[in-house]
Length: 205
Image (cartoon, rainbow, N blue to C red; front, side, top):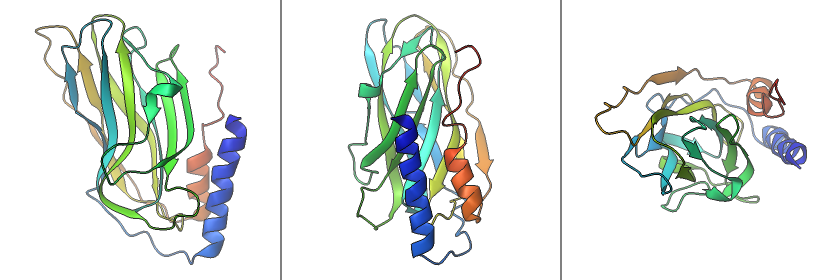
């Protein structure tokens, strides 16, 4: 099922690249993919909390994907706990969602619904994720392997910023790191970025 879904996304990208003339990447250097809220503090064991993976100051967003990791000894989630955003504007269609609670990692690919060509700008919610707290401790909510695409498969330049969870009193928050993602204008490169690692198997599986 996952292979079919990913193949469908890649086919969508190919069709989009054939239907529109590729233009040089329109840089949106201030665009940032981040966790909202940036810090989640004091949630007790057995309780749940929500985070939003959001991109701010983006221009002409059509498709996106990202991975998120956490300490699996502290938190868990499930496919049913990954949803689209609930505050407009947000990408309304989840193409792929996978969760690995053994390694503390998830992957989400999200975009405009099939048949919709309008792109979104501003602050856009990519996904809403609900976590269950299983133990006391602290960890980063690390965003990685992010891709932001326009409808013509032009990669949108952006940075990322991690979130942070702690339910241990007296533990200071960890400074968040911003990472710049360079712009890529090649259709082939964009498709490889979107498809890479999605079918990988952990070495211990």
